[in-house]
Length: 270
Image: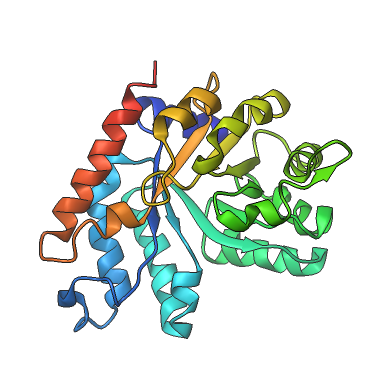
């Protein structure tokens, strides 16, 4: 999906919600445990329930890799289901890959060609080798870890390098490798106030924003500091939507949570 199409979908649906698909069989409603593929069946129900209220889905690959080959088959089926039934939704493979050039290229082929994801999250610690191979695919995106929402982010990301935080140096450098048409940055909702100086450096790039909801991030602050003329945000919510209930009403409750967040977002879309 290209940038123009993504912006059109956000404005048309009046939401910039991304629903995280992080399936855990220990948290799923028990009705799925007897299914041949409980992960896919659960995902399908969540997708159907929330598609009207979001513009993107983000399967976190760890929640599929943990189940081995069957889990990866569930991931492939999940993305195929979205592409077949909701082709206007943006699909992010949250894989956080980062390796030398030839390995990164194989990761890119795996997620862009084999799985047909629109975007993949990238860890840039190894430098240009770990990012550039993902930028050569038409209408595909590299989403680079910039400033993350976890507590441990302070261990490295906030360290001063050349009189500025390391994360700012990373964002400035990565922005020279790609464009606002093929690169986004992960900026955590718990660091919302830092979006203002980041916007000064990358005014046109999209931010993928985890951390609203369970992790305590504020949607109001994210919008105050992170919005740009094209909205420029994909705000992810996972657990508070997909596990809003583990009873028979799980899909209904997931839809309610997604609708609530989407309604709040609509107020920020002119």
